[in-house]
Length: 142
Length: 150
View 1 (tube, rainbow over the protein chains, first blue to last red):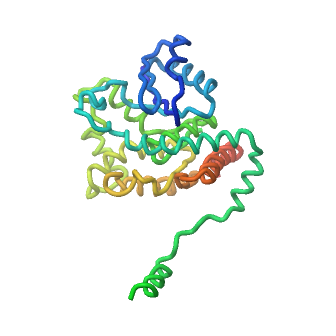
View 2 (cartoon, helix red, strand yellow; view 1 turned 120 degrees about the horizontal axis):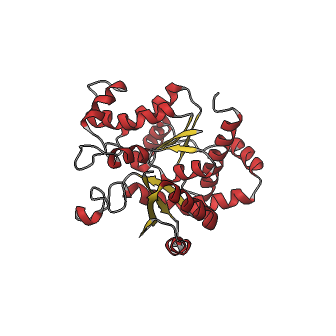
């Protein structure tokens, strides 16, 4: 079996690390600003992921990570500071997590079939055409 | 079913696909193979000179090596995919820094393969977020009903 690493991101603080320690998983756990990173044998990581999804439901978001925690190529400690490669995308998406969590909560409560029909009927906002923009400029710029 | 997500490193898409019971095809698993597998590369590299040569399968030699190197990692994911979920106009995929040409090629490649796909935009409001999540869920549910093919 090979070692794998997962990134666990949360929209706000959740006691992920204490709960993992309580359950006694055989993992390397690193607490981070966006949540936590877990690394270990594939089966153990999958068990931990299933446990966390049961425990925190829609409030945690999990993705794979290629590098192990503390890998010299990625870790800021060895690179002289600055965001590690990939952090800026993660930061961007973590800012969106609160509304995604809310959407998941509402979806699990509501009638999904009704929502699906609403989406089909909903008219999407369209971008303004260039011609219209040119007309506006001609009218307003002397 | 295997679902290609774009951007291939997206946390939200990767999580939603897995949450709704499918396997996301993500960049991180490809990088993991390269940096944890036994090899002579030191330090472990995301893209090796051989990848750039492999990229010739997908793009011509005039195409910048950065694009070809990236395609060598990402295009095989599209080849394995049964369906795709793509987010357009993400802030961090803009311009040279986001390697916009690779992104364009990947989206073209998905469309050329004629696998089922949806294109969405990242949500910025609560209502958009609800549409975003429900669209993905319904796409994946409908996919199961069609047995993965149109």
